[in-house]
Amino acid sequence: MTKTTLETIDWVLIAAGGLVILAAAVRWRLNSSLHPGRRDFLRHSPLRANSLGLMGPWVCIAGTLLGISAGPMLAPWFAASLPPDLLKSWQSLFTTELTAVFNTILGLLVAGAMFARGLKGFGIGRRKLGYELAVALAGWLAALCLTGVIVFATEAFLRHYRPDYHPPEHGVFLALKDPATPTWMRVFTITGTLLLVPIGEEVLFRGILQTAIQRLIPVRYGSFQHRWASIIIVSALFGFFHSTPQFIPALIALAILLGYLYERTGSLVVPIIIHILFNGKSLLFDYLARTYL
Image (cartoon, rainbow, N blue to C red; front, side, top):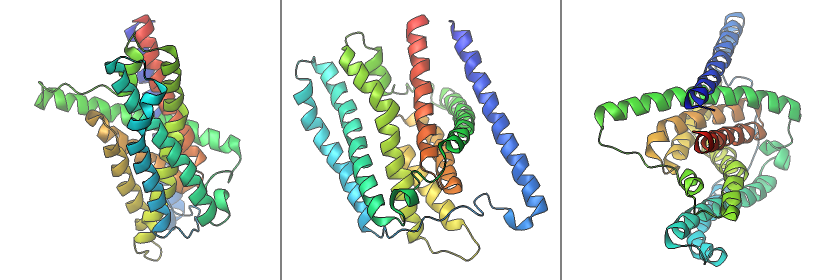
């Protein structure tokens, strides 16, 4: 395994994603030509009847704040023997994953109580898993294409206009790269990044916040502007919620795609699977680079 091999695989995945986006654009163009009333990408998207109001989102946001505040205090109880540098890294990782657990639990409880048909109306268990996997795979490839191109453009911009700027590395990869990191901490980090964080973030951002913001925006008959506005607002929040500034534009684009697919399919399982695959690919490539290069 060489650096060239990894880069080749990366570009093949990006090209495959480009073909998925092209195929979707051609299909939309054909449909809009045959049916002029279907020009909006979200037309005929399923509705998610709910009574979220203001209480539901604030319960979930309170859970997020609880995880952020409790994480640093609870983390040393589980790893008091770690050296100071690793303890700081552990606190950050533990806080992120504890917050994801709170997001998931509170989000599902709120959704079960406030969505028509409970979790099915929320987008879990709404469709067959085979359909969701197929859409998620195509969406994952599209996400790799979008984020790959944007990251490339962002890095070129930074090199040109800020040559002295050194972007910070994500805490997950710093912990995995450190030879002093114990095995149990590596397992915890990988499990959280691969499962806990994607589920928690999709439940909070796509499921609760995106739906709640739609209710706050006036609905114009025949228009989907309220849905698009909620997708963009939540995507911006999602991007700036992360701590790696050089990836914010790419993360916003990823979130827009996830938000669109949630609206279009009515399934929260689809963006969850895409998020898991996206993080999994990053973890796998990081491991291959550290092990073989």
